[in-house]
Amino acid sequence: MLLVALNEPEVEEKLESGQGKTTVRRFLSRFCTPIFLESFILTFLAEWGDRSQIATIALATHKNALGVAVGAILGHTICTSLAVVGGSMLASKISQGTVATIGGLLFLGFSLSSYFYPPL
Image (tube, rainbow, N blue to C red; front, side, top):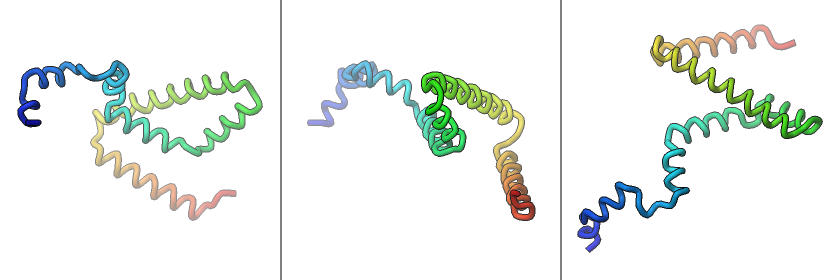
């Protein structure tokens, strides 16, 4: 009986037109795409507990918290936007494998540098 109901044109039409979804659910299904969620989670986890976040917390305790919040949001938005645009331009010129190789070599170089020349 359920299979018969699923094959009816009325049900298919409702599913395609988005009927039955609330306005909030339609908005979230458009806004929370997989790429948005992936980039949000990646950025959130990468920045959580970072020194800049702790410095922002310290600044907000001594100064105007609203001003600090707006400045931090604007600064992070500009920085991330430049990274996205730069990464897009770089991706059109260099392959992903080359970027991964260069990044790995830089990582090894910096680790060797910190091993042989420890911080003062």
